[in-house]
Length: 192
Ligand code: SF4
Image (cartoon, protein in one colour):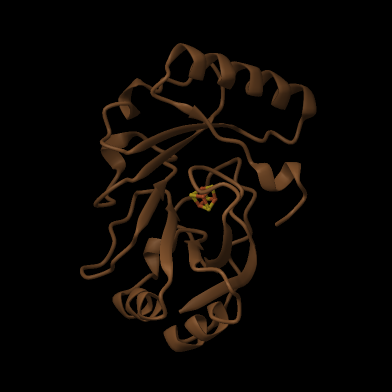
C-alpha cells in the first residue's frame, strides 16, 4: 500500500473531536477539489503488517485512516490486522468510492464533495459537510441516513471570509438543529 504518513495526534474534527488517534494517511485521491489543503500525491510502499506495526508504536486504540481518499487502497487484510490488535477504525472518505468486500470499518465519516447521487460508500455514520456559504443547498444531504450531521465552515485562508462563514454556519445550525457545528480544532490548538 502507498502511505503518505503515519502520525499520532488528537482527532480535531467531528464526532470524535479530542480523541487521541493514530492517523494513517494513504496516498492518492480520485478528486481534485479546489479548496483541498492536503498533500496526497507522495507516498512510500508499506505492507499491511508494516502499517500495523507502526500504528502499534502508539498507545491509542483509535485509528483514523484518511487520505487522499482511503477507500482507493484500504483492504480486508489491513482492517483485519488492526482489529486483531484491538484497534477501533475510523475512516474519512469523500464517499465516491465503495469499500471492497469484507473491509470492516467501525466509524465512517463521509465528507462529500459532490451531490448525494454520486455517493458509493455503503454506509455513513457521520456526514460532515464543508460549508461554503448561503448559496450551498444542504437539503439533498439531509435525507441521507447518517447518525450524525456535522457542518464545518470552509477554511478559505482569509480571516474575514472565515469569520463570515463561521457566523453563517452557526446560524444555519441554529435554524436546522439536525446539524451540529464542527470546527477544525487542530488549527485552533495548533496540533496536527
Ligand atoms: S476529496 Fe479530500 S483529499 Fe481529495 S481532493 Fe477533495 S479535499 Fe482533497
